[in-house]
Image 1 (cartoon, one colour):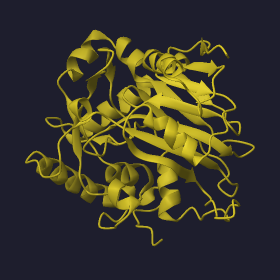
Image 2: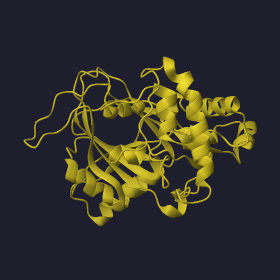
Image 3: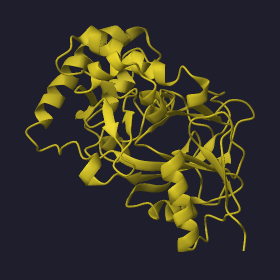
Length: 326
């Protein structure tokens, strides 16, 4: 029987590489070892797993109910015969969304229930660029000065992908569409604390990223500056940031409750195909509120006001304050 080896990432405050395991055939003891390492390190790198869509989803289910499993996160489509389509145009909504993911974020904070964890498995990677970076929100909070901790202790921010796409790219997706985009760009904004206590470890961490905006009680300029400065602080120390240089077959899983991530740019004319699986958070700790909750209306109003301003401010960004037509 192979021996599972967990090796902390050198010079980093989080993360580990795991070898001696096949993610497609884990017994309970092996999974318990992996789950313990996941809670300790927040980011696990499994080289050479070669997971397909089904195996990705099956492994994700070990951690909980899936938001989605074995989904292509790519600039090409996999065809029925196993080949791949031509590279998609960067002006499609799919590619606009992919480019948006190049900003630091945690997954699904823009939904009523934020994600517990997520996983990527590399199939096709460009010869240059296209890495994924991760950052440690737990270590960052531990290293904040006392004045900043006191300032943010009771503050929260709204989270919305309609906001982040407009703010970062000048992309204004249609909020009235059906299908996958309707679950992402839905016009709601969910209020979440800037400081999160991890529900399983009890350790506090920052909880900010590109989706966060509109801190209640602060003027818009002050809110924007505070969110920006906190994200910049998280990623300012190389010990808190890890870059995954993908090789085909690699799998990485991370804890969305205290790890930021972002995609890195590459030549978008070249194919990149990763398989993604995302695990839903537990409602007891990750639920903000549901759309029919009276609190939701304040989020909608905050988002609408912010988007009205960004319609003007974001005209100089990549997509010029436009909506994709395909």
